[in-house]
Image (tube, rainbow, N blue to C red; front, side, top):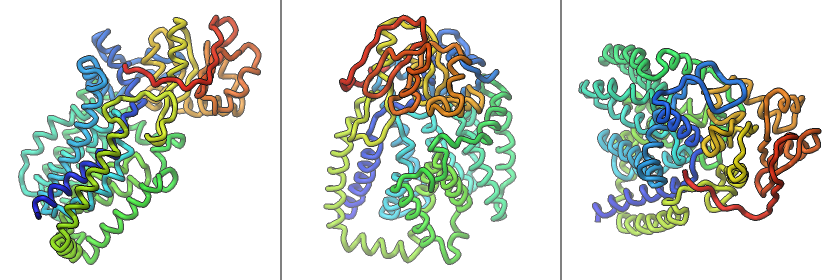
Length: 495
């Protein structure tokens, strides 16, 4: 019965993770990654300049996710949407396996690991879209934490893996900088504990030249310096947890901190190796939701091992043995219910939604109808687009269609482009000057934006397309038919 309860607990956790990540709405960043990958394949080199936008761009465009785009492009060509979905689930459940193994190797009991993992899944679930380059950083962070544990035992072989994988990390995602920060925190904690630490300092220094192994050389370092100091008030995931965080994330974070305090108070935190990483990632997660998942990973790896040594751990074990028959039934029922919830989201179907799908919850939608309209009419020219739609238009219609802006943001555009874009769509200030400032042929606007209500009153502009989600306006001289529909449009087709 004990073994059965243990396996059913693991099954219920996997089912919970599956139910929280089964929605397969494509991530908007994948489009610009695929567009760049296609350009690399066609030209045989990684470009330093942007060839997708007609508005001002940076002189050198360091696309730190280019490696993730190449993987995505290869999977798309070989397996279609199944390749993208397979990579998503492999990264998610690969990370879960690493966290489980690290926690268990630190002496964690099954029940304690399960309780902590439950909160960690809630904290990180918003980060596992289909498919974000950040997910490679999450997986490599889990491996890094495993390496830190090997280091604490005196085993230095993990450093070879670090030196091999770090250049790969650099070319997959700029989150490699998180890895450097975690290594620095590990070194400082070992220094404070008067444990061997000089090899960690040497490893950290060696990462600086290793980061040069990318298509842009030292310009990559300059990009990272700009990216980490750049303010992003318009992007919700960069906002503090208390400003933009969902209620379930706030409750999960508060519960995780309370549970950690119950486990680590009375000086037990001094014996918890990795406590500095725990504190640093918790503070980073509060300051910016984007880093909350890194806290979840550290939390899932490190805290369960301390529970067994406390009175809470003893109480949990007594509860486990007393109620194991009831727990078997509860875990089995939970697994069935959670798998059913996940299956209803059709995790095998890569979605490019043209409208909100209630069962998926809030999610990004794409201007599928407008893009199909432009494709059918063989439009060539420049389209002013909002932040979240630019990369989709870029992939579907480029290079014949050039865009004004997209979700690469700090990668390709000057800082002020975001504010200029928002002012335009809010019809704020001298927004009309944008229409003459850039050689714009069409404006694509969500119907809910203010500019969609007023732009057709501007001389020289007229509406040529409207559906339930967006409208498109053309300047005089652009010959396009007028199309209006109130029908619910079908989802887009990948790729």
